[in-house]
Length: 257
Image (cartoon, rainbow, N blue to C red; front, side, top):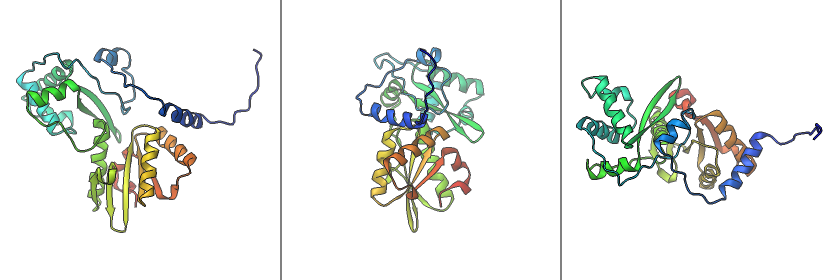
């Protein structure tokens, strides 16, 4: 074809948002990724992307060392503890790292990273096989406060703590919000968005209908701008919505007031 000059009046963000709504109406089954897939095919994914949980064959018998059991127990009881602190429970960093690698290699845990200002924190999340082992062998409860992946839950807890440090009363999962904050004359609900999807807009509509002031907290600028576009297209009252990035909650001056 000969070169054809075309005036483009649709932005990439609009097309992404528009087609995302179409995809969101389709039924689907979550793809199950193996450890081999993650290591060979997708090693360079963004640190904070919401990845599907790795599901291993639960019928495969798991046999772990006492060090691995001790490490695993600490992960269940303290899901957001930095790895360096976990290693302090062992006689050496080497032994702690070896226990962690044993759990990952056996498909009990997988590693996630979360960015916090200029630093990164590595978090560990249970697989289905890991949950089964923890409940049946270690006889520990695997239920936790907060919802979603360990990265999402990390930011839920961090945002709650930031408001509490500022002197407000904050709660997880109250009024079906990721974080609910009572600020005396204002009731604020916070939704933590790991991705730009229609589900976040439905949550916002529900909170606004109840009369709450709402804060959307996104994992990065691309997600934030995508949600802004969706909100604008949906005709929601943006005067009742604040927009922040998750990293803002490491600095008290960035809290919604």
